[in-house]
Length: 106
Image (cartoon, rainbow, N blue to C red; front, side, top):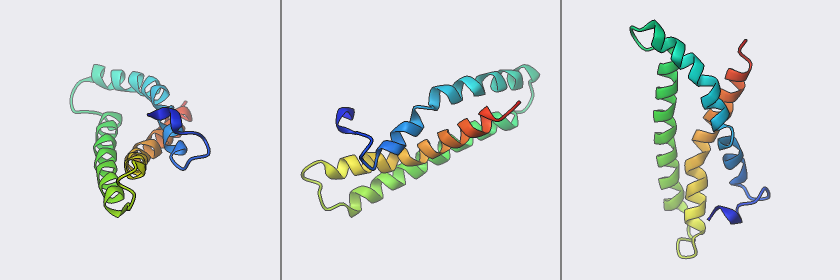
């Protein structure tokens, strides 16, 4: 399914943003481990990680539904591809923002 997505297509930026996800996880894990060792209430990074995932999932679901509703090409699969791209866009933006934020930390 992913083989037909290429850099010339509109959905490619959403895919490249998600390719940074393993790096974001790798940068975030030590921060979460330090917060866990301190005990007590969840730290700022933990709360941020969880809340932004919930928000990105909700935005992605709404975007996918709106894309399907507004598309006229349901029969040939174009609507599904557009919907998938719309669903991935919010998560991709957050991954890119997290990568920039976490990689600039000292």
